[in-house]
Length: 189
Image (cartoon, rainbow, N blue to C red; front, side, top):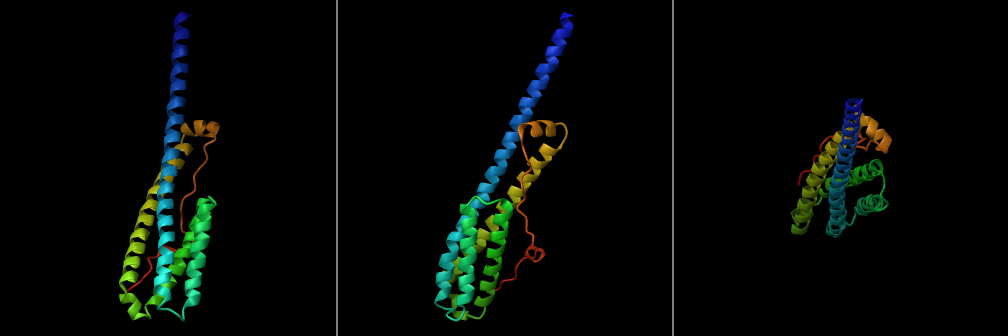
């Protein structure tokens, strides 16, 4: 009888240890997702800070293209507001997608202004924005990889039991909904 109690306590101890390890793993993975999102957030804020400088540089050359500049400013403000409201990943992705679209139109209009394309301030801002776009892309990839690992972990047996009891829910991917946005924009200067 005594050995049966020891074996039973051993199984209970192993089970409790497994629950603790699984829970801690889920917490670490959830924090990795939050960290990956904060890296995207940093780069999106950098992008939002560069856009007013770009608009001001372009404004002097493009007196007849004020609608385009207003659309860029409006889209930037919407994206910045989405960031400040702690919107969902989907809402932020939608706002950023719209911002990217108007930036693409701005760069297409810039083609008509050779003096602007040669302006050092514009070239510098364009390079900064391009670098930031690359950083955003890498941060999105890291975030989506972290989300995939976390979502897989909370869906597989037996971890899904601990995840369900502990209230862990799937995280949302940062995806592009517009099929045309999946193509790389062609911008030449």
